[in-house]
Length: 303
Length: 154
Image 1: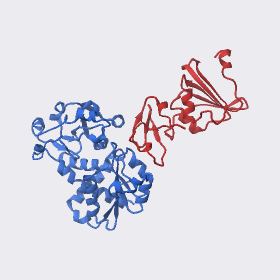
Image 2: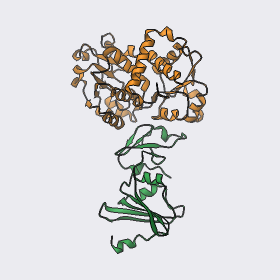
Image 3: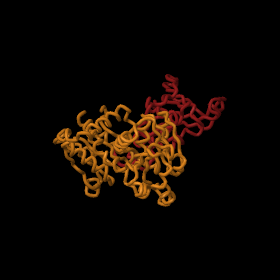
Image 4: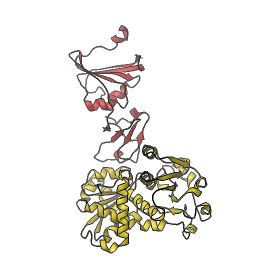
């Protein structure tokens, strides 16, 4: 891994992605072989926003590599409450840890923080910006279920504020993938993501109804419409609940369809989908551990 | 330009003349350069005079100050057709067109309210210059229209 920090999916080439995914597969096949790999190493957790999967899977990953965590804990009990800048916080915590994972509500926060630290910094989500480690586990899951080339993928839900969508859309331009984006008009991809996809030569196909494209999909990636990102609650209410799927919806899909979701879900995927062959979202969440083990291993080895 | 029009723009002794600014943009040019006249430097501003190339153009003359290369680069964002004349002892000693820089630092404010650069952090705004518009290096927000409206207050 030639990167010092993992800030955005845009920085990841196909070779980078394949290196991480191949290594994750090796780790998943024989996790015991990596149990003492990074004994004594500490991962600093800086979560300025709530997190379950990202935080816990990074914790599991470093512990399964023989290391441990130092956790800033909830923001309300940290020096941030006293008005400390983010730049100061990360400079302090880098002295306690061998690598940092940060989630922060401001877009660009991971890029900025990386400019102030020398230890590897991994972006665990910066507002509505990017979530590159989620993308790596998404790609791992897609590869395990459908391969990564000659694919048709539908990405549905909150495309405007969904950082997992932004990262995934960028990363998929490295592969032979047709991307379809399904959302209400008010939640279509932001200008910056469209710009990058255009620059990469990707063809963007946008839809407002899943039915327009469902039967042609190999993968359907569903995201939550995130109430907390809307500046106006009325705007949220206008689109909430519009993009729900259930087992009945999927009767029109190919038998090989893989349904994914970065979780947490609210009501966009009915629980009756869970027991179908389509459901892959829990497997996807579990893949966070070997993928993050692989990423940490490559970054810590490179130090 | 007729003699009558030339009279509006008297010669300066030493400094910079910025010509071929699109009509109506002179005040934005001064803003982007952080010049507001409070330092006491003599300024001449002519706005909306006829121009063969631009239809109407503005001209700014700044006495006693030669623009740096970085300042000239930044000008290209809102005055891409501008020409810069460096004046010494009433003579034009250098004349060049503006060129587009790869990035502009500390000049524009990101319009994304959730961008880290809008918070109280020890960093300057940084924008990559695109073929059309600019893009925040931190949050990726692209600004295409009315760049002058995003100039940081000096």
